[in-house]
Image: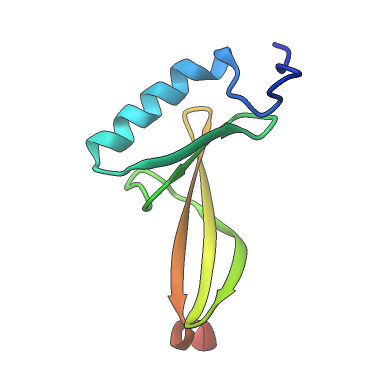
Length: 95
């Protein structure tokens, strides 16, 4: 399916069904979806905490005053789910 040239990062219709199903599962777990976009390969859901069904990896690190924030991602049902994990300065120094 072609990407919409006016909104190239809008979620494509072929990914809406799986995206909606994942959003419903996240809501049943009490996880809030903060943002939805298409990264060019699949829909991406930004959530406020790690889902129980996600086995993700840290792929980006941001230094903050008391340690680091790590952006984590996990594929699930043709959707990428992302969240932020915080590591305090002592955890960063030890690991």
